[in-house]
Image 1 (cartoon, rainbow, N blue to C red):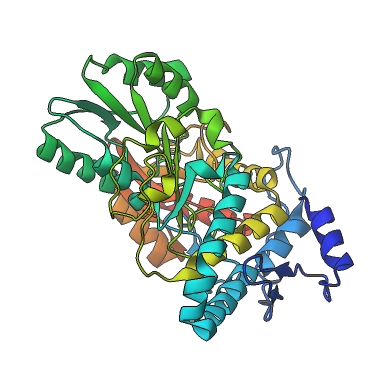
Image 2: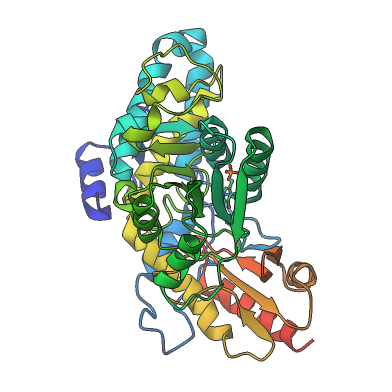
Length: 438
Ligand SMILES: Cc1ncc(COP(=O)(O)O)c(C=O)c1O
């Protein structure tokens, strides 16, 4: 639903006492009205200062409104939204209300409402991601989703797997563990920071396939640079050899628009506390129908139908209100608009990358094309290490980032968010230019 129809619907339903968005919590039916709106007008960014950018000045008031939904710290500028996304006040209010509701109803909630709520939320998540509910489960994070597949796959001695040194550490160590346990062989490739074409990347993975290869793990977005990989083409190529593809989409859901089934992958894991801005501790796992029956669950379940994905989703007692927050996060993103958010994040990234690209001593580690990256970028300096750069950005310029110094990537990961202003980015650009001369 776009912003206008959302607001219209809400006001018709009598839900809109103010001009700020008010949300109905899908799971509890509670009205979520933002209580305390931060006074941030002094920090809200106006139009970008770089004149050549076509998007200059467009949409400013909308993003000011979005920023007003966040409570932000004043002691540093947060350019590290890559670890996880802080949540806007409407989602936070919903979380508090859900926590109170679960606490009030206690075991009665757990015994009579929880399963239905999880079912409803999985359904809305599946609708949002364009896949059947029968192929999706809610997990706690990407680590759980992907490790469930890696640990639960029916490996046989001598099987071969391919992944990249730029992949996430937790999955790499899980592959190391199953390799020891099942005597697998692993091929670890290196993805170039600036590929010349999709075909270059597809060929890289293809060149390592052997008759023993069972699985390729690939990042949809590499977390240390923000590079988006051509997952559909990699999956099509891999399937032509009978190889399955496990996609690490930790950073992708809620970040840019796509439909999971369009990727033609076998497995897709993501963390919803990243760009969907759901409460911390939410993830999803998509599994193609053909692959469900072959996996062993991490925690055994009472469900015995091998083709029922819920067999893989046994949790034990858990903080149910965290899961309920997924509905509020989807509502909030729908209010912003997925495409609008994607364009904004790409615009912010290109704003600082364009401004810095010709600065002597600056190395940009992320492709420029909008199809190869979105909100995350990486920049290094030739006169200092990434950790020195991150420390100086924080201590001398009040900018929080994270240093990356492995897998051919030397620089700081820069991750603005929907609340980031051009003034903040101008401050960051000035800081990097100063440090480049140090
Ligand atoms: C590419 C990638 N995969 C997996 C993960 C693990 O995510 P989580 O800690 O939410 O399980 C991360 C976390 O940053 C990541 O960047």
